[in-house]
Length: 76
Ligand code: TRP
Image (cartoon, rainbow, N blue to C red; front, side):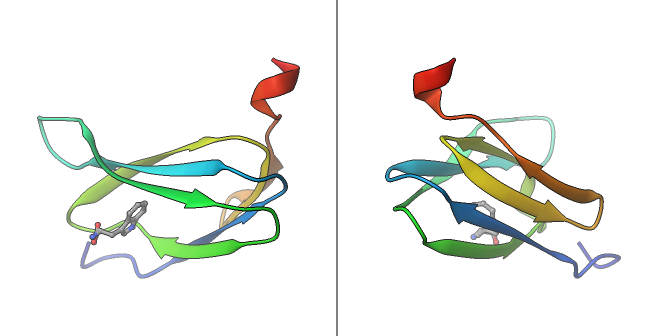
């Protein structure tokens, strides 16, 4: 995206956290799944190819909108 170069940060708080990228445009589908183990950090952007991100598993997610910690799959 030419109008944004912001990054977001995802830090895994357990093993096996999945960071899933969804495609931009009329066809919304998964295009990438990245598995993070506890303590691993992923730094990424929204791009021409990626308009949404789904995070499965317990992680801290920092964006320009703030920080959120989601729950483990186990506790749902
Ligand atoms: N090739 C992808 C892209 O340029 C890489 C990527 C960027 C990505 N941001 C992401 C993958 C977020 C997963 C989640 O769009």
